Length: 164
Ligand code: FE
Ligand code: ZN
Ligand code: FE
Image (cartoon, rainbow, N blue to C red; front, side, top):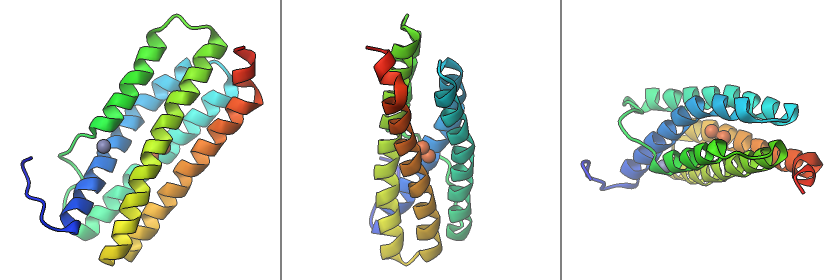
């Protein structure tokens, strides 16, 4: 890879850039997922998470203000793949309830991926003494967890059952 990675700080910054790219990709992808969602509660949940995601982008920008660097310059390949799988699903000729069940699954993969990323980044921020960054990362981590739980509730409340 292009840049040398010597310290945990280097890895931490690289991870933040990766998360930044992931969130930016998601800001672009969520409107299409919301538009394709058939049930109003799933639509609403995805739109709400779009607004949260925009705030998460800003949190990472705030973290970089203190680091005196730019969060740009990296592409999160993991998120690209997850979004691509969601796009594949939306190209299928799926029944509405089946499509929603698939969209929930795709969105939950995204949330779990982000939860893993933010959990790691927060732990490294703490270890490196970046307390403010650790708090900001914790806030996002909680939003991702809540988004994931909300998707589980929507799935359990009706979507998966109607798809049977
Ligand atoms: Fe996010
Ligand atoms: Zn990534
Ligand atoms: Fe998320």
